Every structure is written in structure tokens, then in C-alpha cells.
Amino acid sequence: MFENVSEHLDEAVRLAERCPEKYQIPCFEALIRVLAQSDFLPAQSADDSHLLNGNGSNGGTNGGTTGVSSGSYNNPAFNSAPNNGQQQSGERGPIFLDQHQIPEAFISRVYHLDGNSYRIIVKDLKEKTNSKKQVKLALLLGIGGLLASGQPVFSKERLIEACREYGAYDAPNFASHMKKQRDMFISHGNDWSLTVPAQQRAAEAIKELAN
Image 1 (tube, rainbow, N blue to C red):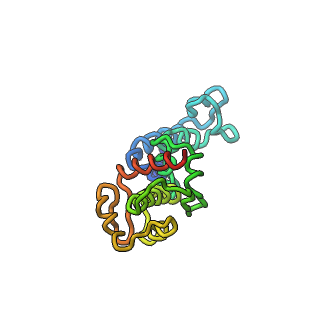
Image 2: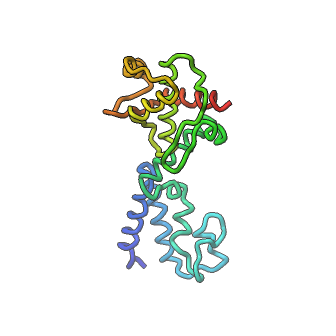
Image 3: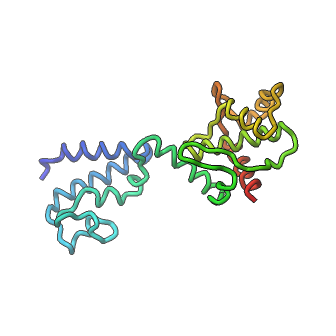
């Protein structure tokens, strides 16, 4: 009954590698158990199909035999595995909204999201000075990037464009405004990314502007 062990190992390794790194070992173990059971119990009846399906249903059966998917897709670690890096990064936007308890309705009042692009649409930033407007726009741009592409990153050109749109572009002091906020913005060449404290500030700004 061990004639297909090599085939099972290769399949389990291939599938487990799709899981996040910290889940790969338990995912591999769960897959091995399921794959092994498919050989040890070749003819599953309706009465004992619950052995391979945690919820007692035979959703993984096909023509009386149990498929590999019945166990592997019920594994939480396997379900969390992204199909590719883009899907994994794309999950960060919903996680941010959940962590900071921001309703989707608030987002639609602050941003126009269109696939992987976004635009800030609020009319009033509720700030009086150019420096504060610039900082708030930088925070909003960072979260816009997070929601659209999974990364809290924005470019210098995008921030300048936004500042001009809101009448807040102060060319002589533009760079110094950002340097004074080292705890919130990390420079990456021509781009900036938001730190964790900045993401918290941005969440507060979104709630303020959406109300």
C-alpha cells in the first residue's frame, strides 16, 4: 500500500509550498494524512466518508472515491495560502480596514478605487496650513496604495500632484515637511512608505474626513 509514497510526498510538498511559510509544516502534515488515507481507504462509503471530511459531509467525493481536496481545502492553513504574491499583498488592505475598524462606506467617501488605481476625492482636508495638508495627503496616498496594490507606498511625484490639486504645494519646504515626519514616512529613493504609527494616523484621518 506504500507504492505511491513518492508520488504523495511530491504532491504534498508542492501544495504545502503554496502556504505561508509559518503554516507550511502543519499544512504538509495535513496533506500527507489526507493523501495517505486516499490510498489506505480506496472505497469510501457514504457512512464513513466523514473520516476524510471534517464536517461530516462528502463534499470531496467523486463517484464514490474521496478526492485529495476534501481534506486539504478544509485545513485553515491551506485556505490562507495565496495563489501568488499579488493575492497575498492584496489581502493587506482588508486587514488594515478590519484592524482599525474602518467601514467600507468611509473608504468610498475618501477614495475612488478602480482596480489597482485610486484617487483621493475628499473636498476638504480639514487642515489650515500647507505643511499639515501635505502630511495628511501623504498619509492618504499611502493607504490608497495599500488598498489598491497591497503596499503603503506612494511616489514623490504623486504627492506633489496631490498637493497642487489641494493648493498645498510649498516647493521650498516640500522636502523638509517630510523629513520632519521621520517616524511616519520612510524614504525609498523616489518613494515613501508608511510606518505602523503612520498607518494608525492615516486610519484616524480617514475616519475624520469620512464623517
